[in-house]
Image (cartoon, protein in one colour):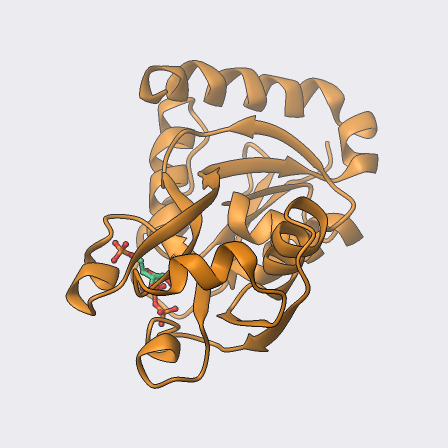
Length: 214
Ligand code: PRP
């Protein structure tokens, strides 16, 4: 039997995923020990698990370095990789939104030379160019994007909003909703055919466990 390899976005999502898999009898004792190790194996059941930066998970899955990936919809949309998205895990729920000062609302509706700061340039382009048919300038940042309108770097931001507390604490607000986000299971296209039975069992098991969270 070949190994089925999981690429997990490291952090809370990886912990949630391992808890769900454990409920289905897919365990990995090695992973519970605190270490700097990046890849873990269950020899008996022939599973491998590795922890990766979230934005790299779709890449590992597209190239077949992992058969299955568990990652946020935000990353899937931004990376645009050729992979199957097979299941919504209904966890890690948040949304993409355009945010800024309330005064930016008018400019946002009319203006064609808005400056938008974001960690997600592809999502911002898709929204403004294809959905709103607006021409914008994108400024790519790597974090603390809320700073951009405050210091005058951009008119608005495109970012993830979960509780809304970061916006609120900085006097900003949601101006437009873009789309909801949650954790998803993705599968390599070839693995889906070659390991169909084992992967379908995992999809069905996870689906049963996460249906209640809808
Ligand atoms: C994310 C996101 C927002 C914040 C939203 O940032 O980019 O800044 O969380 O969460 P809230 O609505 O619950 O306040 P993250 O914590 O990943 O850090 P970063 O800004 O450095 O990327």
